[in-house]
Image (cartoon, rainbow, N blue to C red; front, side, top):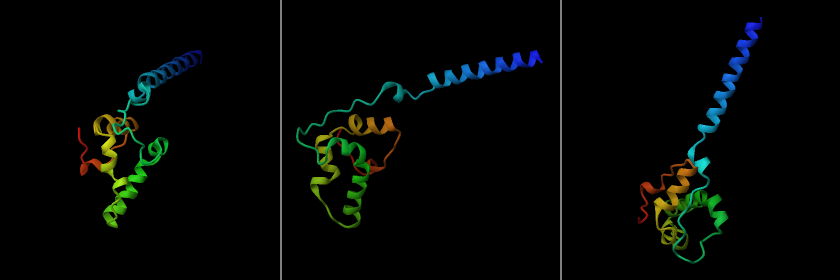
Length: 116
């Protein structure tokens, strides 16, 4: 019986150490590195919406604008993806860094190209 308890204790320690190792080493690099460093906008003016709002809602906003443009034929230059690209000039140093950090792959840029 003592042998079984000793074996169970060793297995428990091995499982615990393995779990600690997986948690410590297995964390995604982006979590350990902190938030991405995004390129500052070039325009110098105000964004079409406040920064915090855009961080939280830009995906829904862009989908809504896409619907207005593609389905309804309503084109509002001041709220277009092209307007965003005037200040956020590098897709790689702005959009991709954040999208890669949060693990999303939007399909916007299969059709829309940003200057690099």
